[in-house]
Image 1 (cartoon, rainbow, N blue to C red):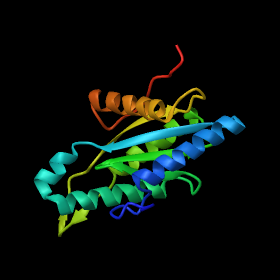
Image 2: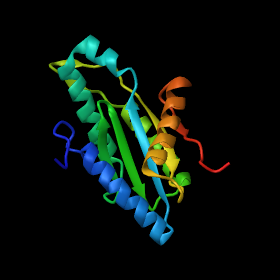
Image 3: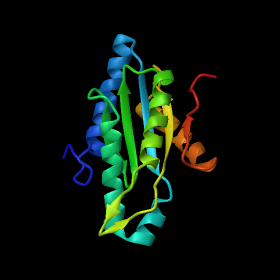
Image 4: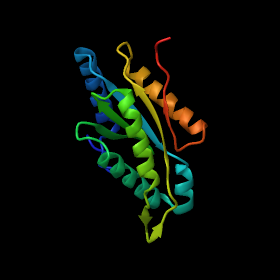
Length: 167
């Protein structure tokens, strides 16, 4: 399936296939490519407090927010459980960081309703990395994941750029 049934964003498989295509395009045409990884902060708490139906509502609303705040030429997909990848073709990291912060801020403003209950505000943490020509798919994702990990470790509801491969 190309689309995730819950979020109507790209599925993990379709997302990774598109990422491979965009990495090749970036190499071939010497164009910028940035990848963001967003993860819902304290998502287990949402499920434990409000239940899985509410958790699904949160995931859906965040997916809508990510899609509505990115360009049609960008790709948003569900990478896993409560994680999303956002592929930003032809976008240098300097332009992607303000967008990542906008996505984080827009998410924090959401008021999700589920089963006649308005849930507590939910935040996301985001890792960001720009594509480096010698990078494999796994290295690119690992770099963005490291940024996400640092965002989580430093207090959540933050955007952190992952490390470079270059020394």
